[in-house]
Image 1 (cartoon, protein in one colour):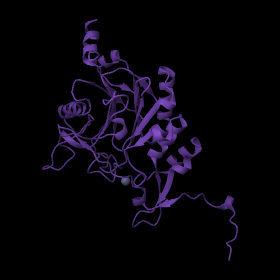
Image 2: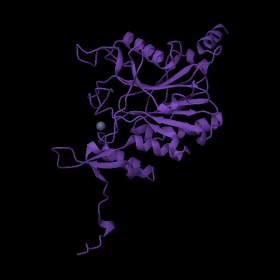
Image 3: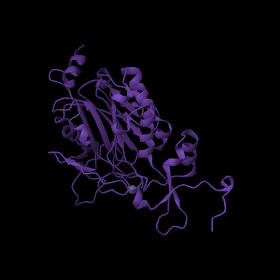
Image 4: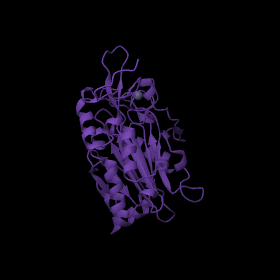
Length: 324
Ligand SMILES: [Zn+2]
């Protein structure tokens, strides 16, 4: 018997329902550096550009490697906390940061640039002369065309997004939690690259790193209504997930997909947008997760930079600037 026609106007809006396991992104396989740091790379970026050596440095850290002792069991090896958190020893974090730079750039001499992140859409253009500042600047995106700098954004569930322009040799790093994503940090970042450096979206390639996945990221009504009111595809980013032992489904958001949609809207070709996979929350042996550790987590870092050419090393440039 045919089912009676449904009055769509009186139907509550349904979201696709899924078991959380079906939404879990694939677990990425880290590269292990000689100094023990484990980080994730995009395979097609390793030799980006002409010739065999890429012009690009990049990587997404994990919690593995490093010297921090505050977030692991007593008998565990040290961990790679890269954020100056209240719980961790400042010296251990500084040394971890040098280990990451060494793992990615092959030497600990490259200058690491970070931000005081505030979940905004504020993007900062970084010049060599800015590196002398003792305090990190406030914002959630960094762009540079200076070789020898490593731009870093810190995360522990939020989504890190890296963008590279092969033609003009410009790189960018963005921090996109749900608030930054609602604020269109990635769209405004690509817009800044276009405005300041003449980057064309079709020349850009992007990498979306590990964050809390749609399997685990249950959110409240305010998040759903923010996305639904601001993005034409907003509701498509949500799934209803029924947790075991729970009668009511929870609404989960897919922030990786949200940022992929922003990159597409900014004009990047679909094939130029890469994802590392991984969920920081349900793979908390590999990643720090703010939510999984109830706020007591270390920080990972996504970094990108333009490899310094011989004679154009940033450390040399910095010395020259200091002398002026
Ligand atoms: Zn998960």
